[in-house]
Length: 182
Image (cartoon, rainbow, N blue to C red; front, top):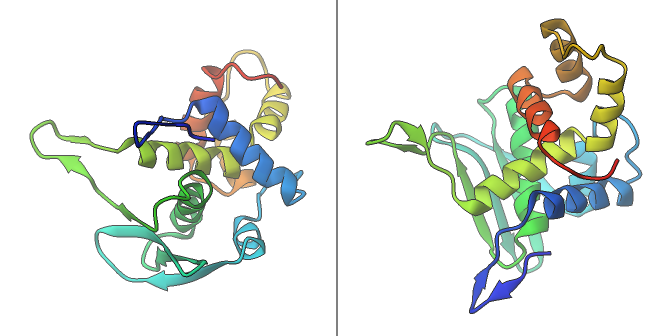
């Protein structure tokens, strides 16, 4: 997956991340939405638990060959679902690091924008690709008119894939800019 040069991992391309998510889906025989993300985690022997915390959405810990993901129990179910997929992104894409913590708000105080490391961006892309598989979403999009996706259609897609409308919106935008074979 990621290549190494002088001890630093190379950033993964969107295509590499899409393929990694598709491999996980294929391995787990996922062919329809919604993706059973908790079942996939369990099949991978990832333990899932709950944790409380104002500033943390999720944590991935690996110790002595065991992976554990803790999700913030106070966050809404759709957010927990995305966080689980995000932490699974770290599990599959970043095997050399034992601890990842997803903070809820990483704002740069001076610029008032959210700051994310390359690994966090990769994990977010993986979560989107896992929960909203490219081939399934593109198939759904083909049934809509060429004039674009309406607000009602966006809500239907978000509901079908069990993600937020915001997550689905980002996925549709990113798929439109991703040149991958169908």
